[in-house]
Length: 325
Ligand SMILES: [Zn+2]
Image (cartoon, rainbow, N blue to C red):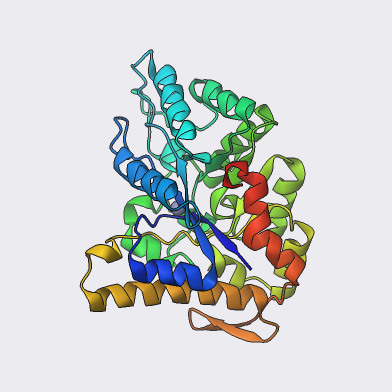
């Protein structure tokens, strides 16, 4: 069945990659990540846009916007002009990243939050046109807990200590960030809102379920959170996905560091093999009725029925990102 990877960062089209995508019939939804206030992220946008325009069967893209320029009175006008241009060029959504909430600050040191009134006209603009917002707000809960081996996020916070918030009370808490995100959901009920990474409520599908119940305009993607599901009881996860089968989008969040096209053949083969293994691991966990191994952990596969898999793998992405149609 055709599959949409609804959350990936893979701006390349090496023949070996295209062969893998054809083999599994996968289309990549490439997500821009804005990490500066003056358009530095545009380089990836141009690449993603080009791939989507030249090979729409295999690629689509999600734009973003410059981080807030708090001293620029024309900031919002500029953002909307950029979005207008990007959606006209085929973008299917707009992304905000965790730097909103955890990095951008006011001159007095306060953290700029996603529900800041400055961004409201941008979210209104998206909602009025039916353009979705993909939001990666906050981090996994483990970000605020002591580093522990066995955590699905041990590797990331070991390598990226600047994002590890344990015993840093000067930073917003997980709860504060979730509350700011929830205020956006409440204030923009017509905004199609996709919470990246299980909406940062990866630690318990019951908690995520309660948030989905509260906000009908929210869907979530599974990107980079497979292992958070794997460590929860398989029967519970299966029941959760079955109940919310219209609101969960399959995504991997694979981040391409070096384009395979620019690699030596052996290195390129390794990169493609590693991407293949990401996909086969996900498919095994979602589809298998027997036991599967994910990162050395043996668990019961979810054995989701074809009707649910079809939604998870493809139709939900088209429903929540209408531009993919
Ligand atoms: Zn991502």
